[in-house]
Length: 288
Image (cartoon, rainbow, N blue to C red; front, top):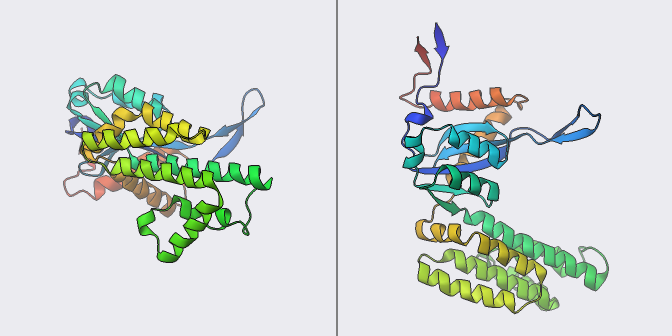
């Protein structure tokens, strides 16, 4: 019988650097459970990628650490021992699953998500200050709201006019000025390339956070402290999840071409089949 089989089994591949990321493969939907209560169904998928080649290894239904743990645990022991580095987002569940099943692998946290957390901190402070000072949410007439995107932009990428607008925002509220400075300290921390510079920048960031009473800054610093080991791996290797994000984009483009998918199994097979057909050394069918 002819059996549809993707040749190039993951277990036969030599994976040195592994990327793990998640994405939605369809819209959120609601269903009524057995008890009659309406439940929210999150159609998430986890993508495993070879960061050296950018190739999608597999797509697993789910978004929790259990799905990652199950997939890694199903790999042979020799395969798991070969993996040297793993790049993930700031997911404690993913980190735990990797540590338990890939004991020799070092984990690198994607710096993009660290910056995302820092920008979220600024947004939280801006909204809080608007309610404290103006007793309402921000409006277009407020400089901090009108030019709010400037607070999350890289200073070196702004034009002269944008820098002037940013100064207007920071001068209007001292707390916004302080929190923006802390965000810039985080960016400088991620630019370092050796442990000595990292330690110096870390000390500056810690001193700045201790000098303020803002809970948002202290919350971010606690998060960074919990991920300090993974940050050090990133500093030494500069390993990111960029190729996993690119793989996600490939999967989403296929979804758009297919006008959406409802069945995750079909979604997975179509993506892996497309990637197999695009490979020169791939035989989609084997005879048994």
